[in-house]
Length: 79
Image 1 (tube, rainbow, N blue to C red):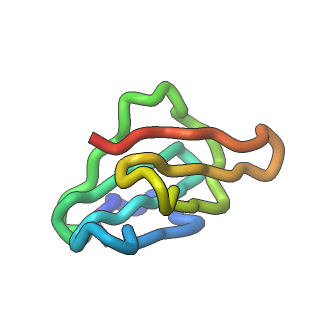
Image 2: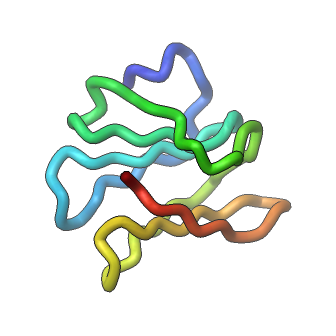
Image 3: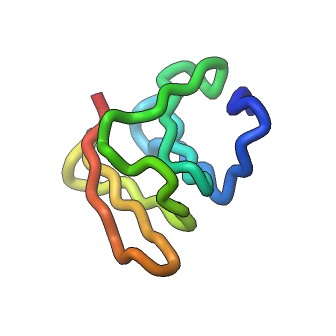
């Protein structure tokens, strides 16, 4: 994928929105709105956070939960 060599731990595809992907890396969270062609680092102030799991909220189209091995769970909202 187009993350420029950043180690990617997990990628999740949105179950309802075509082309929306979220990637968890050792350097934070990135999202794509175009099937992974381009990636954006979110403005969630989660730089260098090691994300190991991703779960989309089934009741809220833009809400995403992120799991880390040592820092707990985070909630973000996609644009």
